[in-house]
Amino acid sequence: MPLQIYNSLTRQKEEFVPLTEGLVRMYVCGPTVYDYPHIGHAKSYISFDIVVRYLRYLGYRVKYVQNITDVGHLLDDGEDRILKGAQREKRDPMELVEIYTRAYFDAMDALNVRRPDISPRATGHIPEQIEMVQRLIEKGHAYEVNGSVYFDISTWPQYGVLSGRKVEDQRAGERLEISEEKRHPADFALWKKADPEHIMRWNSPWGRGYPGWHIECSAMSMKYLGETLDIHGGGMENQFPHHECEIAQSEAMTGTPFVRYWMHHNMVMVDGVKMSKSLGNFTSVQRALESYSGAQIRFFILQSHYRSPVDFSKEAIDASAQGLERLMAARDQLERALRQASDGESAAEIATLTAEYKALFEKEMNDDFNTPAAIGHLFNYAREINSRLNSSLSAASVKLLRDSFVLFADDVLGILPERAAGLPADDFIDLLVSLRREIRAQKNWALSDYLRVRLDELGVVIKDDKEKSSWAYKN
RNA sequence: GGCGGCGUAGCCAAGUGGCUAAGGCGGAGGUCUGCAAAACCUCUAUUCAUCGGUUCGAUUCCGAUCGCCGCCUCCA
Image (cartoon, rainbow, N blue to C red; front, side, top):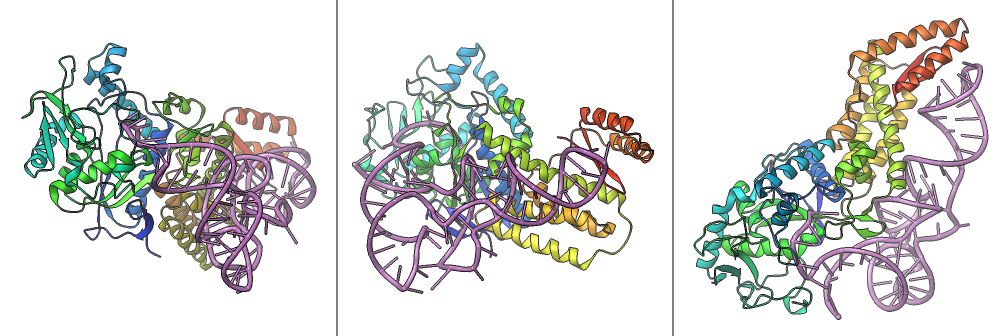
């Protein structure tokens, strides 16, 4: 079965067919860089990292764009996030933005998330956004009032297609005061007039101001990917109003479909409640990395589906970390066997096994990137591999197993980081282990145990069998 | 009030209109071992929130109820 993607727009799984054969145009909403990235960002960008990696595994060329929002947007109290952050930390807004942009990339690197091909910044694309607003005014879909420009919902009856909402059903103004400038409560800002104290502002045909909340994604995605994207990703909480507004303003301007497949991932929870910056109950990635490795966090997130919420609890991560250790141990055993295996043809049985697991892995990944199920097969695969490594295999057979295991687990899922130590240490450990073998042959258990304990303290675990001893790194 | 999602073993978590309801953690037993660890083997949900309905048959489809969550406001 070919790749199926759950499309939020149609609310069903659909076969994935890109607009241009062999090329995927993909855009994902990036972070607002006014604070450290949290575990919710981890789930988001790991989810879409899997999408990109798997599409590339399938042979597509993927052009992946993810914005950096460095224009301040308004908080409930009318204050600007970035401005507020800058005041809090007594820094220039752009300095603040730079610090958190770097923190964001550092965190993603630690989680083994591959960087987007293009990371456009909103402040670097003000002219594009202004141009878009102008075109919307020209086409009669937007109006200017007192230095601000709003999108006119009444000119866009399709508003609501993505979220399935009717404008009249919404409780407009229940929690946020409706601007009196708007003709209709659901009209949204494309450009906002800046108050004198507003630091981040730019010249525009409507005076000094700054872009609206939704316009940057439309302007930048279309600039780099064209008028129709294959995939647009983001969090479910952005489905409305953010993505709904993107569709309205983009399609009103171009007259063509904006996005073919909308993908939305679910939220990270803490004790059953959504984690978010506004609720203040978030764990930063940097903080989580003090307790867990990037691979452990990544693996934990991939053990539930991207469209399911995940509860970030110590118990759950500890449990999944144990599981990850098994997969990493299997990889280590394969690498070791590869160094020690004798020459020879690969066995037909091994080729059958690798083909079987390739089919299973692809079946699950083709089903809307079902990483938990794919990982389930990986555990079975690891067991099959381990039992075969107990007997001697030819180097060609081991290589076949190693290559396929690493291809799925690491190239696509990215969950098998290199072990900590540099490679030369391996040779010394090999030497110590073989020396210990001699000591054991002399039944000098005291010295043998001493070596085992010392090596254990250094992070190397010994495993003794009748004919040989082997070892593995602990973490 | 409107829109949407979820409720599967002690915990985490896939899945399916009917053959054994994946996998991981934890637990129990075993093989191996000088001991240990790892690995491997066996066991660990007669049952999928509750109650109805459709069906020859439902955990899976439909309805109701209960519970939990998200969105309707910036948020990954």
